[in-house]
Structures are given as C-alpha cells and as structure tokens.
Length: 393
Image (tube, rainbow, N blue to C red; front, top):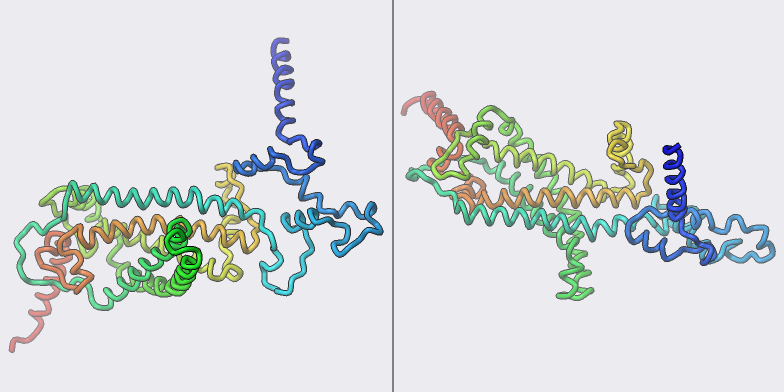
C-alpha cells in the first residue's frame, strides 16, 4: 500500500509538470507566446506544429467567396508555409535550391558559427601560441651543439621544395583569407567601414576559392614525394621516448630522413588536407557533391550516433549541406592552422639550421648528424659507393 501511495503521489506531481511543457496559447489566440520565443533563443526544441500545420489549407470552406491572389491563405499563412517548406513555390530559376525561400533550420548554423565555433577555435590558436611562447622562454632556440664542418648535404631536391612551398604557401593564404572572412565583420568593419570590408571579403572569397586548387595540387605532390619516408618504424619509438631531444640540450636521438615528430605532422597534414579539401569541394559544388547526408546515413547504420544520443539527419536541402560542410571546414581548419603554427616555429626561429632544408635544400653536415644521423649515414654510404664505382681519372 505504501508503494501504491508513493506511485500515486508521483503521478499527481508529474502530470502537471508535463502539462507545462506545452505553453498555453489560449491568451494569444493560438499564436506564438513569449515562452516559445525564449525557449527558441535558448536553443531548446520547440513544438512548432501549431504553426507549421496552420498554413490556411484547412480554411477553404469558411473563406469561399473571399479568394484573392493568395487563395485561402493570409499573409501569416503564406509566411508560415514558406518557413516550414510546405508552400507550393514557383520560381523563374530552376536551380536545386531556388524553391527554398526561407530556411528556418539555418539559425543553429548562424548561432554556432558566430558563437561556440569561433570561441573554441580562438582558444585552440591562442593556446598553441601560448605553448610555443612558453617553450621558447624555457628551452630557447635549439642550437647546433657540435662544431660546424662547413660542408653541406643535399636534403631536399628542387622538386620536393616546390611541392612543399606550393602546399605551404597556398595554405597560409587560405588560412588568412578564411580567418578574415570569419572574424572580419567584428574587427575590419570598425576600421574600413562596411564598403571597405565588402571589398576585402570579396577579394578573400576569390582568393580562397581559386587557391584551393593549388593547395590540393601541393597536397598530392607532398604525398607522392614523401609518403615512403614517413612509414612509422621502431626508430620512431626511441625518438619519442627521448622527446626528440627537444627538451634536453645535447640529446640527439637517431632518426632517418624524417623523425617521429615530422611524421606525425606529415600524416596530420595528409588526413586534415584530404578532409578539408573534400569539404571545400562540397562548398564549391554543393549540388554535385553533397557529402553529409550520405555520411550521416552510413554513420546511423552503425548505431553509434544513437548510442551517443545523436539524431543525424539523412535528408537535407542544399543549404543544410553547405552549412554542415562549412562548419566541418572551419573546425578542421582551426586544428590544421594550430599544427602548422608549431611546424613553422620549429622550422624557422625555433631551430638553428632547420630553415635551410627548405630554403636552399642544403643543410650543414653537423646539423644533419645531430637531427637525422641515420639518414646522413645512408647519404654518405651512397656517395661512397658512387665514388668507388666511378673510374679514377
């Protein structure tokens, strides 16, 4: 009996609470209430069937004889039908997205893009800069410990350096134009005004769209040139165990042409580069390359999203496809930029002699001995075998 009484009390207390989930719209004649608006602003799911199902289609009998250019629908009815995608729209353009005049679902994208996406992305970039600054203050510039020999070793050919700079240079411009597009309204309009920012934004868009092809070509060249040298091996474990010698002066763990740290950056560039290229192509060709509806369909088939409480949509308008692609594009870009910032630091001011490898292609022999000793031995053995095979003059 005690259990039944507790169950009854629980039901009595729960039913009124459940009843409060649906706002009382009697006072507004069935229209949106203040609670509807506040819940929507908080990002909560709001039952909009009271509007989406009320687009004038059921009022025909009461409005016979009063038909105008809108038929039996009022201005509000027409707007709701457009907003919820139930309107019979006829447009002069036959594009795939032309009939979507109002995309109500786009508000989540706008709020996420200008809110959490930018906020956490800024934390990632600022955090990387802070880590590098702290590392420089503690470790300083990594110098060549041994005595320089005055002899150089060819580290990268001209073709390798061209592929690297095509990939790196285009990425730097893409990253800059992307960040200007993302943050420009807040920081550039106060300086250049709206018309000035409009010109800058248009230029950034043109550069971003067209330099994407150079980036993808550079990505292919870098992959072809160096993938064979970036296969992980046991030497990499020793390098990682010693921290690459980055934190201890005089420590130089052996490495081949690329050490474990460089291999991590290489594979990160390849994976992120492919991902950001695919999302970029989807943005350039949204009607020909919709990616996310298909991706979400495959993901839902694994039941993993459902286990995580996610409901991934499998039917999307072209606008929704572009919004998901843009969000993913920016998320990958933030991580990519942070990794490249670290790479630029170690390849320039962070390590003595490192920039020469991509600058002239030649490195000091002692630098090669300290940072890539196994690779230097291979190069010297090849040179010795060539010299032995050449007839004496």
